[in-house]
Figure (cartoon, rainbow, N blue to C red):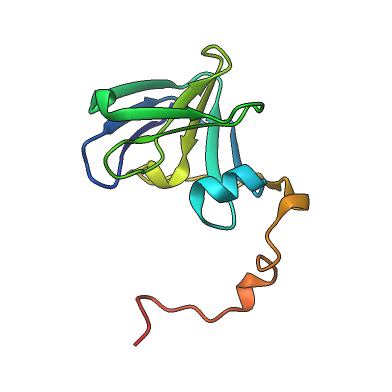
Length: 134
């Protein structure tokens, strides 16, 4: 069984995940692209792992998009995405980038690719830099 730690960008929220992730999806739906301001969200899913808030739980805000099943939990100070429990406690969704510990999983799939941004094609061909280019 795995154990992970994570936090938000400003450090006010800290959490632990005790258990394994079953799925890892890169979601290209229009809602996840808006949430992240990027090409996709990267979320880990578990039906058995347990979430424990170790600091800042009172600083979490949840947004539920009306008319959809789309939800987002985030730090009200810095806006960082944080884990949330969905489906009446049956599913833990963890933004992969919120973890401070290493995840030894590769994504299972890109999902909702019909909604993929037009500029999100062939990105492996774009130059890569180890830090901000000068």
